[in-house]
Length: 299
Length: 131
Image (cartoon, rainbow over all chains, first blue to last red):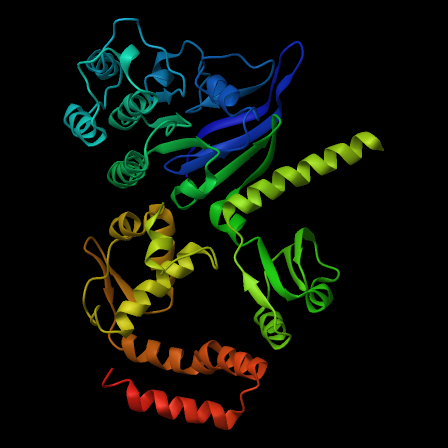
């Protein structure tokens, strides 16, 4: 599997804030990545740097094994769909698509036309007059039809209605299956995109707190539900990441997998196993990081 | 949002690729996917369940390792001979732990005796065919 992006110790500081702090990772060819994290966690900053539209304060990175800045060989293979993409004042969607077709050598005009139909984009109206959702759809059409080897989508679904979001996910999957490429999808709607992702990167206040295969993350914790005393006995000594209580019933989430012997012991004790979603795990990982930080500061 | 939860077939309870494998096994067990027939492709599974194709591939490969499916180069995956019998044997072996244990647990909680259970089961099986 060849490496598409290799980042080492990336940092970005502004006078008052640290947007990225010592971020290192590799992206492999042909996978769909989720770049997850709360608002302001550094997702857009990181993508701006990786697409050579912004500069890092520290660290280095390569794209397709080369440095990316002002490097046409690299940049013509990279598409970055910004959440707040600016267009010229009197541009219409058709102008944006024509510009994209000149830049991206794999541009598929027929596919773009099909997507415009599906998203019902009024392509002869000025972009300025489009709704937020229609504006997002213009970006999605460019991101999909460009078929760039490396495509970044920054919160691509903003303002899109439920039908259009589903169109996006379906088209992304179908086209990715036909034309495999590397896709980075930044999102805070984790449940909605969880099953599309092969690998997740989670940022929290500028730091990379999770870099793992989505399947491994999903199986990394379980929730045990039942009588509070029985749950407490069963979860004693385990790495508890979350607990909730309602009357005599407790739900405790612990890290790690359970063996079949443990499962049958659990069933015998009248305890039930509840699934933990990717979103819950990411939320908890962020909270865990926050707790560590505050205790670290106190010490 | 995705089809997985809405069909009731797939959820967060176990790794997705295991659930994909189980769904394919289900169709072999119930006969809708016959022996020697071509299994759904990675991309078909990915599109239908709205999941990453790599996950679907992992599920199919699990069935290849298990001997349920076989790869035919350049064509696709096919159900092996004897796959259905093997799956039936495997499921029968797991039937008691998977289905009866929860029933017994719940019945005990409700104060039903084993005789009550047996009576209920007899009553049900009498009614089911006509229902």
